[in-house]
Length: 352
Image 1 (tube, rainbow, N blue to C red):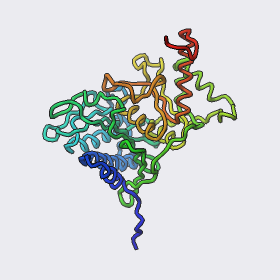
Image 2: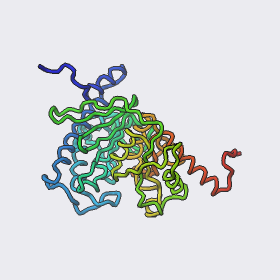
Image 3: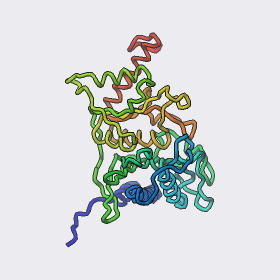
């Protein structure tokens, strides 16, 4: 006998969400379903990468100056192929490609633009560490048939939807279209994403910090001061915090979203060519900041919300601090105090 209590599928969740909005065109439903399909294909290859001989490097670098792995190329090809014939997009941007990806003219009349990192954390793939995909979807704002960079260079506040997929012990898609954050785990026996985490809410405060402390000497004095602070014992505030760092943004943010605390990738002086840190705004920081805020948390550059940053370059980098609201506010207060001390301004004084 078939169990009548079948879980909420991703497709049903998207469809029911659009039914609540009479002006919805159904395009977003098609887009998210295609993202789900692409992620199933990538998940299949990640799970058998060693057997399929797609581990290791291709011998070239991407636009970020990073060695390109075979699985990066595969994932990028899958996502591009999944998106470029839908008729829902006007332009695309991938971490792996130096310039925006144009949609074939036949399908270029879509009303959305998409930015994506097809395989985040791929440097860990040979060690069988969790990796993921990240995406952010914007409404088209440029006039005319096709898309332009203008459609991509929008602040995160303008996102129509965003999400990520974790390829780990299970494959999980976490997304938001502006009405909370929901997680769907792939059931390989039926090939469907089933809702496993309804309306995810990040704790107001957590006791985990996540950062690559190998960069500690290159961080600002303020960030180093904050790290020293969270290591000091204080039972009232739950310190010292526990340190957890995987080195795959999707995996680290996913844990932070569920357990609380703060994930950090500050600016540093280690690489003068990257003065704002490593993480890219359009297809890493903005989508993750959108999800964190939708779940009740906060995401900051250290001096203001990530979602308020207006991008000027398609591969722009920004410092990134995200997680529980109280933890992020605590970090921001450290930076503000150090800035005030450096400029000689009294803490709490007026700008006048």
